[in-house]
Image: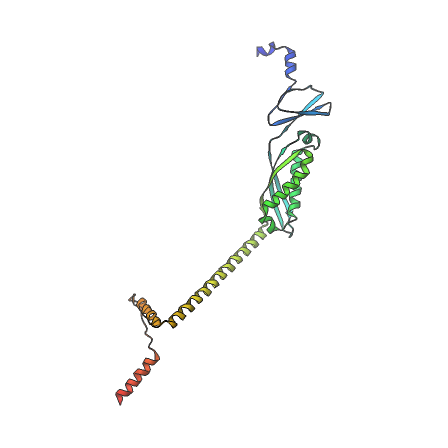
Length: 250
Protein backbone atom coordinates (compact mmCIF):
# COMPACT_ATOMS: atom_id res chain seq x y z
CA UNK A 1 0.00 0.00 0.00
CA UNK A 2 3.00 2.33 0.32
CA UNK A 3 3.21 2.71 -3.48
CA UNK A 4 -0.30 4.22 -3.46
CA UNK A 5 0.82 7.11 -1.26
CA UNK A 6 3.72 7.71 -3.62
CA UNK A 7 1.40 8.58 -6.53
CA UNK A 8 1.00 12.34 -6.95
CA UNK A 9 -2.45 13.69 -6.04
CA UNK A 10 -2.81 15.17 -9.53
CA UNK A 11 -2.58 11.70 -11.10
CA UNK A 12 -5.19 10.34 -8.71
CA UNK A 13 -7.48 13.27 -9.57
CA UNK A 14 -7.10 12.61 -13.32
CA UNK A 15 -7.78 8.88 -12.89
CA UNK A 16 -10.98 9.71 -11.03
CA UNK A 17 -12.19 11.51 -14.15
CA UNK A 18 -11.84 8.42 -16.36
CA UNK A 19 -14.91 6.31 -17.15
CA UNK A 20 -14.91 2.99 -18.99
CA UNK A 21 -17.60 2.09 -21.51
CA UNK A 22 -17.72 -1.62 -22.34
CA UNK A 23 -18.16 -3.08 -25.81
CA UNK A 24 -21.82 -3.93 -25.17
CA UNK A 25 -22.62 -0.42 -23.91
CA UNK A 26 -23.09 3.05 -25.23
CA UNK A 27 -22.60 6.19 -23.13
CA UNK A 28 -24.98 9.13 -23.22
CA UNK A 29 -23.18 12.23 -21.99
CA UNK A 30 -25.06 15.20 -20.54
CA UNK A 31 -23.19 18.47 -20.00
CA UNK A 32 -24.91 20.78 -17.53
CA UNK A 33 -28.12 18.84 -18.16
CA UNK A 34 -27.97 19.11 -21.96
CA UNK A 35 -27.36 16.25 -24.35
CA UNK A 36 -23.85 16.47 -25.72
CA UNK A 37 -23.39 13.18 -27.57
CA UNK A 38 -23.15 9.42 -27.48
CA UNK A 39 -19.86 7.76 -26.59
CA UNK A 40 -18.63 4.49 -28.05
CA UNK A 41 -16.73 1.82 -26.05
CA UNK A 42 -13.41 2.78 -24.50
CA UNK A 43 -11.98 5.07 -21.83
CA UNK A 44 -13.50 8.54 -21.64
CA UNK A 45 -12.73 11.55 -19.48
CA UNK A 46 -15.66 13.17 -17.73
CA UNK A 47 -15.77 16.41 -15.75
CA UNK A 48 -17.59 15.74 -12.49
CA UNK A 49 -20.41 18.02 -11.42
CA UNK A 50 -20.67 19.53 -14.91
CA UNK A 51 -21.08 16.31 -16.81
CA UNK A 52 -23.07 13.11 -16.29
CA UNK A 53 -22.52 9.80 -18.06
CA UNK A 54 -25.46 7.38 -18.51
CA UNK A 55 -24.52 3.90 -19.73
CA UNK A 56 -27.04 2.01 -21.88
CA UNK A 57 -26.79 -1.74 -22.43
CA UNK A 58 -27.40 -2.46 -26.14
CA UNK A 59 -27.50 -6.26 -25.88
CA UNK A 60 -30.67 -8.20 -26.68
CA UNK A 61 -32.90 -8.43 -23.60
CA UNK A 62 -35.43 -11.16 -22.86
CA UNK A 63 -38.25 -9.82 -20.69
CA UNK A 64 -40.95 -12.01 -19.21
CA UNK A 65 -44.39 -10.47 -19.57
CA UNK A 66 -46.24 -11.57 -16.39
CA UNK A 67 -49.56 -13.40 -16.40
CA UNK A 68 -52.35 -11.25 -17.76
CA UNK A 69 -56.07 -11.82 -17.34
CA UNK A 70 -57.86 -11.37 -20.65
CA UNK A 71 -61.22 -12.16 -22.22
CA UNK A 72 -61.38 -13.59 -25.72
CA UNK A 73 -63.77 -12.46 -28.42
CA UNK A 74 -66.18 -15.26 -27.47
CA UNK A 75 -66.18 -14.08 -23.80
CA UNK A 76 -63.94 -16.78 -22.32
CA UNK A 77 -61.68 -15.62 -19.46
CA UNK A 78 -58.09 -16.84 -19.69
CA UNK A 79 -54.64 -16.12 -18.27
CA UNK A 80 -51.76 -15.66 -20.69
CA UNK A 81 -48.08 -14.75 -20.48
CA UNK A 82 -45.31 -14.14 -22.98
CA UNK A 83 -41.64 -13.28 -23.43
CA UNK A 84 -40.42 -10.33 -25.49
CA UNK A 85 -36.96 -9.94 -27.05
CA UNK A 86 -35.70 -6.44 -27.84
CA UNK A 87 -32.56 -4.32 -27.98
CA UNK A 88 -31.67 -0.63 -27.86
CA UNK A 89 -30.76 0.81 -31.25
CA UNK A 90 -30.56 4.49 -30.27
CA UNK A 91 -29.14 5.11 -26.80
CA UNK A 92 -29.99 8.83 -26.95
CA UNK A 93 -33.70 8.18 -27.49
CA UNK A 94 -33.75 5.42 -24.85
CA UNK A 95 -32.48 7.91 -22.27
CA UNK A 96 -34.15 11.16 -23.32
CA UNK A 97 -37.49 10.11 -24.85
CA UNK A 98 -38.66 7.73 -22.10
CA UNK A 99 -38.06 7.63 -18.35
CA UNK A 100 -37.46 3.88 -18.04
CA UNK A 101 -37.48 2.03 -21.35
CA UNK A 102 -37.30 -1.39 -19.67
CA UNK A 103 -40.51 -0.76 -17.70
CA UNK A 104 -42.17 1.03 -20.64
CA UNK A 105 -41.64 -1.89 -23.05
CA UNK A 106 -42.99 -4.36 -20.51
CA UNK A 107 -46.13 -2.31 -19.89
CA UNK A 108 -46.67 -1.78 -23.61
CA UNK A 109 -46.38 -5.51 -24.25
CA UNK A 110 -48.94 -6.29 -21.51
CA UNK A 111 -51.60 -3.93 -22.83
CA UNK A 112 -51.02 -4.97 -26.44
CA UNK A 113 -51.27 -8.64 -25.51
CA UNK A 114 -54.60 -8.13 -23.73
CA UNK A 115 -55.99 -6.17 -26.66
CA UNK A 116 -54.86 -8.79 -29.17
CA UNK A 117 -56.44 -11.62 -27.17
CA UNK A 118 -59.73 -9.72 -27.05
CA UNK A 119 -59.86 -9.58 -30.85
CA UNK A 120 -59.82 -13.37 -31.43
CA UNK A 121 -61.81 -16.38 -30.26
CA UNK A 122 -60.33 -19.07 -28.04
CA UNK A 123 -60.04 -21.53 -30.93
CA UNK A 124 -58.22 -18.93 -33.04
CA UNK A 125 -55.89 -18.16 -30.15
CA UNK A 126 -54.99 -21.82 -29.63
CA UNK A 127 -54.56 -22.55 -33.33
CA UNK A 128 -52.81 -19.34 -34.45
CA UNK A 129 -50.40 -18.51 -31.63
CA UNK A 130 -47.58 -17.73 -34.07
CA UNK A 131 -49.64 -15.26 -36.11
CA UNK A 132 -50.98 -13.55 -32.98
CA UNK A 133 -47.45 -13.29 -31.53
CA UNK A 134 -46.29 -11.68 -34.77
CA UNK A 135 -49.13 -9.18 -34.58
CA UNK A 136 -48.20 -8.24 -31.00
CA UNK A 137 -44.56 -7.88 -32.02
CA UNK A 138 -45.45 -5.56 -34.91
CA UNK A 139 -47.61 -3.33 -32.70
CA UNK A 140 -45.06 -3.07 -29.88
CA UNK A 141 -42.21 -2.47 -32.32
CA UNK A 142 -44.04 0.36 -34.03
CA UNK A 143 -44.93 2.05 -30.72
CA UNK A 144 -41.41 1.73 -29.31
CA UNK A 145 -39.57 3.12 -32.34
CA UNK A 146 -39.79 6.59 -30.80
CA UNK A 147 -37.80 5.26 -27.82
CA UNK A 148 -35.00 3.85 -29.98
CA UNK A 149 -36.10 0.27 -29.26
CA UNK A 150 -36.10 -2.58 -31.78
CA UNK A 151 -38.46 -5.42 -30.84
CA UNK A 152 -37.13 -8.62 -32.42
CA UNK A 153 -39.66 -11.23 -31.30
CA UNK A 154 -42.64 -11.87 -29.05
CA UNK A 155 -43.51 -15.43 -28.03
CA UNK A 156 -46.74 -16.43 -26.28
CA UNK A 157 -45.85 -19.07 -23.68
CA UNK A 158 -48.71 -20.34 -21.53
CA UNK A 159 -52.45 -20.06 -22.07
CA UNK A 160 -54.23 -21.05 -18.86
CA UNK A 161 -57.91 -21.99 -19.18
CA UNK A 162 -60.50 -22.23 -16.37
CA UNK A 163 -60.93 -25.73 -14.91
CA UNK A 164 -64.60 -25.87 -15.95
CA UNK A 165 -63.65 -25.10 -19.54
CA UNK A 166 -60.95 -27.76 -19.50
CA UNK A 167 -63.54 -30.37 -18.49
CA UNK A 168 -65.89 -29.17 -21.23
CA UNK A 169 -63.15 -29.38 -23.85
CA UNK A 170 -62.25 -32.88 -22.66
CA UNK A 171 -65.89 -33.97 -23.02
CA UNK A 172 -66.10 -32.51 -26.52
CA UNK A 173 -62.89 -34.29 -27.51
CA UNK A 174 -64.19 -37.57 -26.11
CA UNK A 175 -67.47 -37.17 -28.01
CA UNK A 176 -65.55 -36.49 -31.19
CA UNK A 177 -63.49 -39.66 -30.72
CA UNK A 178 -66.63 -41.74 -30.09
CA UNK A 179 -68.25 -40.24 -33.19
CA UNK A 180 -65.21 -41.11 -35.26
CA UNK A 181 -65.19 -44.67 -33.90
CA UNK A 182 -68.87 -45.16 -34.83
CA UNK A 183 -68.23 -43.81 -38.34
CA UNK A 184 -65.24 -46.12 -38.85
CA UNK A 185 -67.20 -49.11 -37.53
CA UNK A 186 -70.16 -48.40 -39.84
CA UNK A 187 -67.84 -47.99 -42.82
CA UNK A 188 -66.32 -51.36 -41.99
CA UNK A 189 -69.74 -52.98 -41.84
CA UNK A 190 -70.69 -51.49 -45.21
CA UNK A 191 -67.48 -52.78 -46.77
CA UNK A 192 -67.99 -56.22 -45.22
CA UNK A 193 -71.57 -56.37 -46.49
CA UNK A 194 -70.44 -55.41 -50.00
CA UNK A 195 -67.78 -58.11 -49.96
CA UNK A 196 -70.29 -60.71 -48.74
CA UNK A 197 -72.68 -59.72 -51.52
CA UNK A 198 -69.92 -60.16 -54.10
CA UNK A 199 -69.03 -63.57 -52.61
CA UNK A 200 -72.66 -64.69 -52.71
CA UNK A 201 -72.96 -63.59 -56.33
CA UNK A 202 -69.82 -65.53 -57.20
CA UNK A 203 -71.05 -68.68 -55.47
CA UNK A 204 -74.36 -68.32 -57.28
CA UNK A 205 -72.94 -67.96 -60.77
CA UNK A 206 -70.10 -70.50 -60.60
CA UNK A 207 -71.18 -74.18 -60.89
CA UNK A 208 -69.96 -76.28 -57.99
CA UNK A 209 -68.69 -73.29 -56.04
CA UNK A 210 -71.35 -73.66 -53.36
CA UNK A 211 -70.52 -77.34 -52.90
CA UNK A 212 -66.82 -76.54 -52.57
CA UNK A 213 -67.64 -73.88 -49.96
CA UNK A 214 -69.79 -76.43 -48.10
CA UNK A 215 -66.99 -78.98 -48.10
CA UNK A 216 -64.54 -76.37 -46.84
CA UNK A 217 -66.92 -75.49 -43.99
CA UNK A 218 -67.27 -79.20 -43.10
CA UNK A 219 -63.49 -79.56 -43.10
CA UNK A 220 -63.15 -76.57 -40.78
CA UNK A 221 -65.72 -78.03 -38.41
CA UNK A 222 -64.11 -81.47 -38.36
CA UNK A 223 -60.68 -80.14 -37.48
CA UNK A 224 -61.65 -79.99 -33.81
CA UNK A 225 -62.92 -83.26 -32.25
CA UNK A 226 -64.83 -81.40 -29.55
CA UNK A 227 -67.17 -79.82 -32.12
CA UNK A 228 -70.68 -81.19 -32.58
CA UNK A 229 -71.75 -81.19 -36.23
CA UNK A 230 -75.40 -80.87 -37.25
CA UNK A 231 -76.19 -81.94 -40.80
CA UNK A 232 -78.89 -80.13 -42.65
CA UNK A 233 -80.66 -82.45 -45.12
CA UNK A 234 -82.34 -80.72 -48.10
CA UNK A 235 -86.12 -81.06 -48.35
CA UNK A 236 -85.75 -82.76 -51.72
CA UNK A 237 -83.83 -85.60 -50.09
CA UNK A 238 -86.63 -86.11 -47.54
CA UNK A 239 -89.22 -86.28 -50.31
CA UNK A 240 -87.09 -88.81 -52.14
CA UNK A 241 -86.86 -90.93 -49.00
CA UNK A 242 -90.64 -90.77 -48.56
CA UNK A 243 -91.13 -91.92 -52.16
CA UNK A 244 -88.69 -94.77 -51.64
CA UNK A 245 -90.53 -95.84 -48.49
CA UNK A 246 -93.86 -95.91 -50.41
CA UNK A 247 -92.34 -97.95 -53.21
CA UNK A 248 -90.98 -100.51 -50.74
CA UNK A 249 -94.38 -100.88 -49.07
CA UNK A 250 -96.06 -101.56 -52.41
